[in-house]
Amino acid sequence: MIDEKVDQLLQELQITNPERYELVQAARNAIYSVVPNATERVMYGGFMFSGDAQFCGVFAYREHVSVEFGRGCDLPDPRGVLEGSGKLRRHIRLVSIADITGKFLEQYVDAAYRNSKLT
Image (cartoon, rainbow, N blue to C red; front, side, top):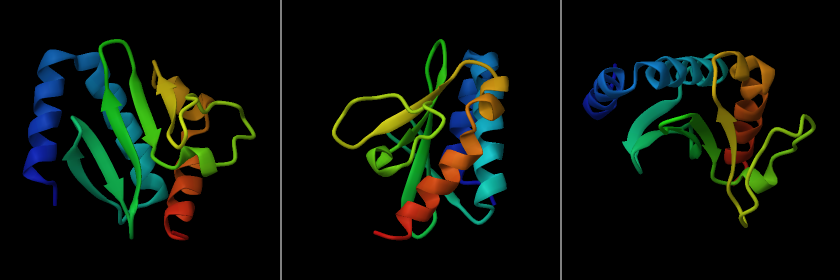
């Protein structure tokens, strides 16, 4: 069952930026392929995903989509795709649907989900 606020934000995105809408949908599908029982809600202008705890968020910007990890500093980054230099947060910048596989999004989502279960 889709949350009403999630549905509303998706509809707004589809109207205002169809290209980013497609990329957000692809990122959401990748997240659900890794964590099928994840819950999703609208927070901070994007989509936050939780299992037992929050593990990532998807945010649409004008030119890209960002998949953000609140404790990204704790994630292994063998592929060197995590961006950000803050104390905790890291993100993966997506500009095309090909980036989802090219930047190994599902592996990072899996690592973030597993880490969220440890805290």
